Image 1 (cartoon, helix red, strand yellow):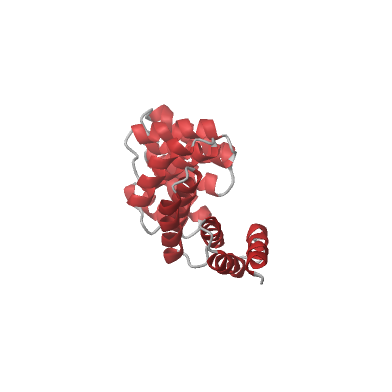
Image 2: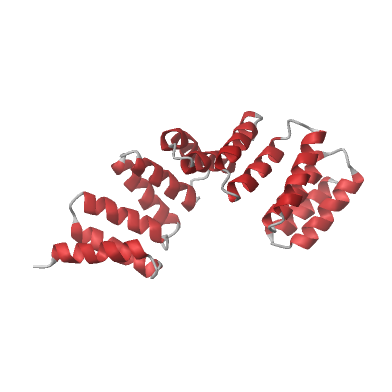
Length: 220
């Protein structure tokens, strides 16, 4: 069965959801008392947008093992997608308490707290997510955003710059760096960063507004 689950995970990573479901379903048929198969099926269904069916699978896994941390994580991702952030937070906290202490769990718990407008509580989880996966540009960016919200401007600047090391086309990182340079009264640098944001995303309205504002400040 482990081989079936491994094959299913490989298909899922490749976006081959039907093949993944076939492998995981076979795994469940072979071992109906093992929660892993249900968790894997739920993960595929959630990725495919079948949220209610996914929740059923995660709950089935919890009926078999109420300490199945990955099932709580899976339920949390569905709640987060539905913008039920309090419920998502509770699920990610449960997953973390049960030992699922990877970068994704820390990140999603941090993001749930962030969306609940609790940046100070979100900060340590986003920091840990960035530590566990230094190459994750989005984790670095969200950590920078959280730091900026808490007025840790220099620390935020460092993480926005690190974001761009891993994703040189991250428009929001350029934009937020531009805001910091505008705050530091360096309109030329701010203008260039807003321009870079627009180059990465021509529809970035705030960057367009910021660039015009800086150009006015630089006008003789």
